[in-house]
Length: 430
Image 1 (cartoon, rainbow, N blue to C red):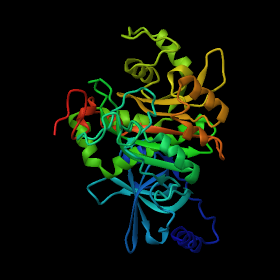
Image 2: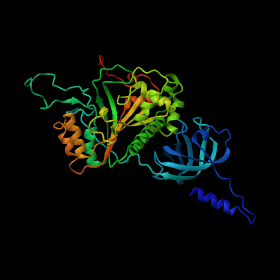
Image 3: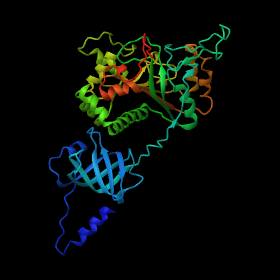
Image 4: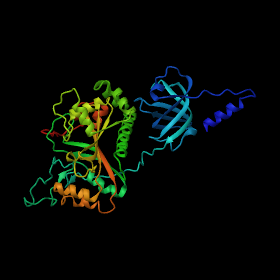
């Protein structure tokens, strides 16, 4: 509407003489717009995602970012532009004049003449249902046996008897419970504590930590799954940068100088994809001497993961299709040979190594039945096998360690420094 009024005024001012055409808007990245030295009303076009919306009686303020800068560009528009579609996460194209800002918080702002919605985003209704998965469970999702067993402190029962009639443990993952619920709600997630009885005091391991986990029905390719994983990382990071600016800047200034530029580099680039086989070959050809010799069929260690990220230009990299023998029973068999792999994926990030882990799940009854039988788990997981008998669909999911995520975006080297009460082997203070 505002743009239409400008057009009518321009038409009325035209005489019979030829009306000069306005210069086309120059396309700028948010970073270039913020760094512009000339603010004499030059017409520009900026594309990006809305990070915040503030509507007043006569003025609308938007902050947009395209990943090229940690700082967002303020857009000032007439209130007539206000719309429900102008919401956090929506992608927009804004054309207008780049002018000096009266605010001390930014040097320039974009006075909007035209705002076009490229893609809607309702962040409150993304289609994912929040499931509160149990903390006490009778299954070992990871199959590694690194479990904390749960028993009553007072022996008010027969010693040979279990409180729950079966051995019970603190959960290592809510994945199997999410798979049950994804059969009803299609897209589900959980965010809660997980526990690993791993005898490690490394800078990236805790005995108790938080995980964001998601499970999605009707996903048939790792590509689709990786798109969700990359989107979660970038969207969550932009939200943190938008809402917790001072906290992030404090860490970047005093703890991790240079992290701001490294984070910008991650956000503006598409994440890379290599296979496990390609990763092993890269490691074998490396001039660096590793503590653990890289071999096909052996799991990647932290030193390997960090080298791979550095080799890929410090851009997060997905490693896909791991050897079947390295992964749990629920991962989908790729039916390849002679090197037998499963449709698994890990996301490796600078400074941390593995951040996400995920896979397509084995939805085919007979394949899963054979995997469980070979592992001697058929009786314990009969309920899980039964899910494949009644309307099973292709599906997949992933988990992201929250504390490792904080390490990644803040540049903090030790995972024990991003949680108030760290729990690890030989330490449970308070």
